[in-house]
Structures are given as C-alpha cells and as structure tokens.
Image (cartoon, rainbow, N blue to C red; front, side, top):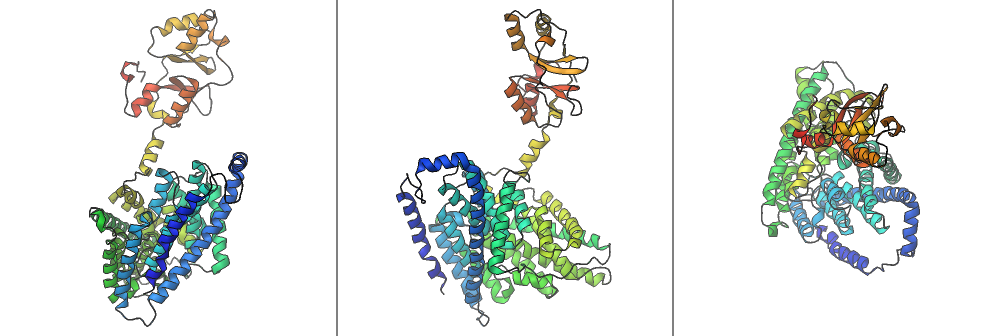
Length: 603
C-alpha cells in the first residue's frame, strides 16, 4: 500500500511551517513592506485589500478543491483497481482509517470530522483562527481517508480547507480580527461552489448554515468568491455537472401526495441517521483519550466488512447516485445501500474519521427516493413519473432533514437539473422532511457535533427568540403625558406624584418629544421654571421606537438618549402616540423584574 508514504511528510511540513512562522521577522512582511507602511495601507484601504483578498481566496480555494478531487479519485483508482480482489475491499479501509487516525491524533487534532462545525467554531469561538497545519492535515488526510473507501463526504472538509486558506491569508496580511472572521464564510463558500459545482447553492449554504444570517454584510464577498472558485473549476476540469440527470416531468398532480410521503420518509430517515450518529459519537468520546488514535479503525472495519460483500458502499458513491438518478439501479440494491450506508457513515464519522456528511446525505436521499419511486410505480404505474425523478427529489429531501438547510437544498437541486419543473415537488418534500426532522430531533446535527466537543455555537432558536422579543410585548398605555403649555414648575410638581422619571410631551397634533426628571431640574436651576415645555423641548426629532422594533434596539436608544422611557409611535405618523416602553418593562421581558411592580400599570 502506498497510502502511508503519502502522509509521512505532513508532520514535517506542519513543523516546518510553524518554525518558519516563528522565525519570520516581525518588522517585515513577505512582500518586504515594513509593518508601519503596511499598517497605514490597511488603515486607509482596508476595503480594497479585503476585496482583492476575496478574489485571491476564490482562486486559491478553487485550485485546492480541484486538487482535492483529482487526488481522491486517482488514489481511489489505484487502491481499488477494476480487477482488484475482494480482500482488498476489507484491508484498505481498515489500513486507511488506522493510518489516518494516528496522524489526526498525533499531528492534526482539529482536522477530524466534517469541517462545517469546525469552521463555525473558528468563526464564533476562535477569533477566526484556523492554522495552516490544520489546512494541510485536512486536505491530505481527508483525501487519503476517502480514497481508502470510507464513505464520508468531501464537501464539508473542503469548506474547512477553504475557510482555513482564508484565515491564513487574512492573518498573514495583518487584517483585523473582524475582517479575518468575515473571510471564513468567503473561503467556505468558494470551496462548496467548486466541490459541488453549484455556485448559487454554495452562497446560500454559507449564509444559511455557516453564518446563520441571509442578510449578512459579507454577501457581496461571498458571491464574488463563489464565482471565482467556480470559474477556476470550469477552467481546469471543464463544464461537467456533478450528475447527469434526465428531464423531469410531472405525470399527474396526484404525484404531489406521493412526494409528501417521500418527505415523511425523508424526515424519518434523517432523524434515524442523526440520532444514530450523535449517539455513537457520544459513546466514542467517553473512551480514554489514549484510544483516540485507534478509534477510527472501528469505522474501517465496519466499512471493510460491508464493502467486501457490497462494493457499491465504498467511497463517496456519487457514481452510484448517478445510476439511481438515471434509473439504472435495482430496487433491492437501493434499499440495501440505504440501510448499509446509513450505518457505515454513522460509525465512520462517530469513530473519528476525516470526512463530511454533506455527500452521504445526498446518497441516502437518492437511494430513499429511488425506493419510494419504484414502490409508487408498482402500485400506480400510470400515475407517477420514473423512479429517477423521485431519487432526484429524495436527494434534496434528505439534505433538508439532516443538514437543516432547506433553501440550499431547493436551489442546489435546481442548479443540478437546471429544470424549473422540479421545484414544486422538491419544495413539498423538503418542507415535510424539515418539519418532521425538526420536531423529532430539535437540535441540528452540526450544532450538536460542536456541542459534543464543548463548543457552544449560537443556535437558530436563540436568534428566533430574540426576534420575537419586540417592543409590542413590553409596551404599556401612556397614562402620563405632559402638554406643551405645561410649565417646568408644573411638570416638576406632577413628577413628585409619578412613578416615572421621563414623560412624553404632546401638542394637539401628537407627541413632539420626551422630557426627563433630570432635565426638568436642570431647567429649573437655570431659571426657566416659568417657561412652557414648548419653548424648551427640541423640535428636530425625538427618541422613539415602533411596536415591531426588537427590545435590544429600545435599549440602545435609551442608552443613547439617557432616558429610561421611550414613546412608542406609529410608523404611519411619528407623532401618533401608541404607548410607552420603560426600562423596567424591558427587563421584565428578560425575566429581570427589578422595579416593575412599583410602577403604575396602565393596562
């Protein structure tokens, strides 16, 4: 076997890289520009540097992914020649997982697993830091792992490699931590675009899953990097889609019901896969740390044993997905591969092999869709389309249920087929699968994988909860309002009997400002006690909120205006007072009811 020889140089390379970094003079960059000069360039033109970095990252990541694909395929062809004996299918996965397990344990601990949770961890918990050694280890060890037949995916590892290249380049250029972190989704997007040949879906996946915000300010950079990486892929490997699929056709509207059934099946398979993988990984993590290097061999043994009898199980399996998408695979084989692949992927990942779950989710979906399509054709031969159509929709269905990125799933399948007719059944099936998966397994798999490693990523539930905390949930009726003809002295007298420390000021057209107790006392001390409020309250706008504003915005505006009460006004008419919101009311919404009981309730 030539596999170990490939990776023996990696530890030396990682060690040399660290040594070079440590020995590099601090006052000079690699371009020979002194640090003060480069710092001045970054200070004045950081936006332009970031833009150029985005283009460079897209090109570099595109090259890396092309090398990743070619390396994996060529190693796989050498390890599994067409006339190879059956025993090879047992020995190679075992040897590959054992060798890579040692390298991952000894030299590249951050290169284990998928790559997407690690990328999110770097973004949210590690200041955007992914070491160059991790990039090298992820690239070569994942290539060797997949080439040896371990049935994991290459898209997740490619995302970490891309994000790592972006992180290394950003830190090398001396960019601020915020800018380095912003480059991580740029690199991840470029990697997904090249690895799966779907540039639009790559953008959406990065925003939907990695960043968790479809309105992220890095949208433009992400799109640019995706396009650059995809162009590099086409330039080097040609315009070949990942899957060649026939034209989709809806035979009868009643098929929508069968696609809903496929969604139910996809949701259940997604939950079974997620629970099995997380449960097994939790058990492996309980073993002593000294066994960590040996654990991946458990996946190799399972895969090798299954692969000896069913060779279609080995590797990423995109060739067999293509067969299912073109109706060239038998029903029994698809059902068998569905079960065996689910178990093999769960054991391989849980035991610590390097590889992702992006590709396996598509494989499981294609087999599941093919099974449902064949069964539907058996019972309703003149009502439904070909099993290949259901295999195509099944890919997106399983992806939506496992990865929890339903919008990415729809766009991805659309980019693969370039056929708009598939969108509606795909949306139906995805929605059902996503709903069932979310109900039966509330926590997303990538977040749970990070949590098992002790990393607490921001969850979608917390973001949704924050969006649900709006001013309308904390506001109260405006029971105390000062009129503009009220004098400062009169306002101070009324304030003695009020539970508030700030009050809206209104005229006949509505609210025109806010006055605080501290401001009233200041005016009185300056000799303006007899003046009416209309003479003192500014007419150039006033601090306020609307009912649909989030509570944190109300807190920001309270801090900026030094007020603990704000008027809540209409969006159609800023002078129309709809109520008030106080600091105590907001704190009560967060469970901190300090003095809310002492305030007068007007509702």
